[in-house]
Image 1 (spheres, chains in turn purple, green):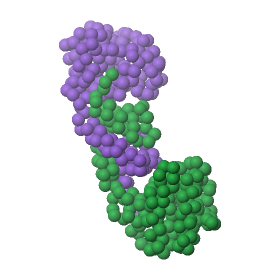
Image 2 (cartoon, chains in turn cyan, brown):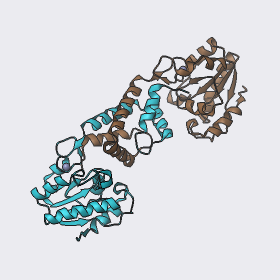
Image 3 (cartoon, helix red, strand yellow):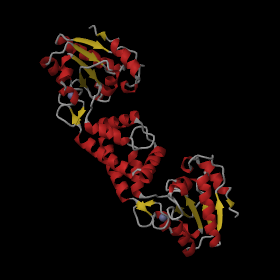
Image 4 (spheres, protein in one colour):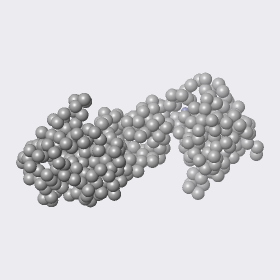
Length: 201
Length: 201
Ligand SMILES: [Zn+2]
Ligand SMILES: [Zn+2]
């Protein structure tokens, strides 16, 4: 059967969401039409605004619709002298929830992966270097994921920090290997922060 | 921490989708921003079009952006002389998938619920009566959900059909009591169609 083309299109488009298969997409579409058209309209507007207006912070590269994000603009964040390097913007809320860190962030938007053509410049390490030069950090905490590429990226960052005489630490491996940082529970992530160790070259 | 207001708003708005809690809403928002902005924009447009342009078929009351839906417009569907009455538009794709029914539908958009002020007119029974008068059906299959209200609605429809001398059947109870028609697997639903029985007043 061919149901309404607009409805078919909505069901198809909902599959852009992670973890949404054909069955749940259908359920979502009917639910909105039957019970929550206002919610559907709000979502439509929120999506459009987010997709078109959210760019990257000029200091830390995380998502923001401003020139500089809220965290970078926060003066108290600067006082700690700590910089936490993560792979993706979605890692930041996970770390914030542990309450263990009150410094600034730097978001790589990926990790080193030479085979995919992702080198130091692609993950913004030139900008990171600039920040090490211009701001006064006493510690860089590398919180890349515990994968082979994440480790290689951590080592590369440690080498850069050595050039600027800044102490580098790596969050402890309490995190199950192969899983994503943002999916880890708060306690594990909290432990991995307190158990961080210096990267020795 | 206050992340970007547009991002917060997107996460909040995603919770309009059924089964989406704060954690998955966050995951969805970051996923779209990080990996699929085009998908997010398509979804925004599809939502807006569906929420604003999809109305109800003038014959069967299901969702359509046309005056009359595809099924009602299909001449062959008329030939079967069967009319299947369901509670919600989302019940139609579930029934279509069984391949057991090739007649027309009538969608109540609810069920009788006097305590909530939902009487015969609110579920379109005046329009159903009109159709029984003007079209030639030899069987009305009542496929309301096997709940107390669904059964009461079925009996009410049976009384109307009796007035027009049209045979009424009820789909068999193979469906687990208390669950929703649209969530039932195809085999069970298929059995409930073939095992339907006449409603005796
Ligand atoms: Zn920033
Ligand atoms: Zn119709």
